[in-house]
Amino acid sequence: MINRKAILIPLLILFITLLRQVSIHWGEKTTIFWFYLFGVIFLAIIFLYQLLLTRRKKER
Image 1 (cartoon, rainbow, N blue to C red):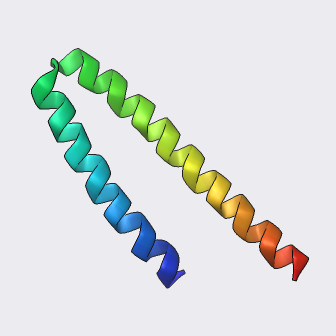
Image 2 (cartoon, rainbow, N blue to C red; image 1 turned 180 degrees about the horizontal axis):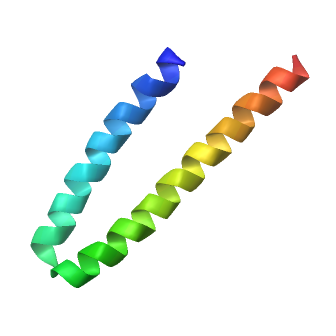
């Protein structure tokens, strides 16, 4: 659990800084689109990571 949080917190910080850069370069409408897109990708990565962890535990 500690390792997972140690990975997720820097990812969230990086994600927020990327969003700020995107919002500066493009308008607000595209920022909202990218926000949703990144959010979906981020959630998918977390979901896949959880699946891998549960499968490894089952194998042991």
